[in-house]
Image (cartoon, rainbow, N blue to C red):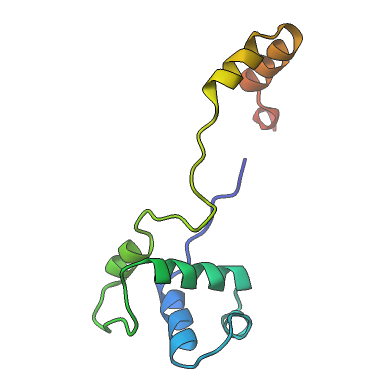
Length: 114
């Protein structure tokens, strides 16, 4: 089962944005200062840039509004949902031996007995 990505706390997001825009720190410096990964810093900044929000964020903006603007359903580049090819899957399921194995995997997933 894939890990669910944890959202960055809005308090940390505000700090990431402040360090990036006001202090002009690099992603690595921000990650070290806030004890978070560089990828998390990059993703936070990317999502902020893709949103309609601008810097500086008003001090009285509630966290719920900031979160709604940041996670407005937009995906990062290269992370669009890809639908499976249903026709290909159906053809594979009808093959004699391979189809039976695939059906068994669908019925009894590997991690279901753990």
